[in-house]
Image (cartoon, rainbow, N blue to C red; front, side):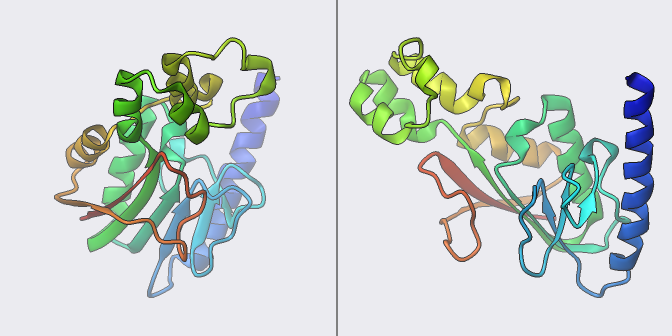
Length: 202
């Protein structure tokens, strides 16, 4: 099984490099990291999905040369990386972006729920975090449990954020200008109450 997996990874790697070549000469390069099956207009989707524009494991890095990418977008992807891969991929974003290139990301964060947690406001928390599977409803029933579901997703999420933590990780990855922006229904997918929208400029 391990050998078969390695063979599959090798073919994905080689196919990704081959596909990358046709995009690398474009005067403007815009990437969508963790795109899944979704195709964002004007962007090159990079994801493990075979339906992505470039099927690719971002644990290998971003398959573009340094200082060649204009914009990188990502919606609710970075929380699925473990801490080592998170920092690695953020540094890869910095590497491939042109000077003054923009990284525009959305991740979940805990800030909107802190006050409700401290007040033990179960009604508010359940109204905003309402996708707990039925089989867990009797188990994840306290304010702490509900927030942990938001952050952890039964292991689907590997890292958790508040506003300061994501800003800090962008700074140590090389970004100097980091700003929070408002949600924009024209460009943002998966708009959620818990989302924070950040732009970082190289």
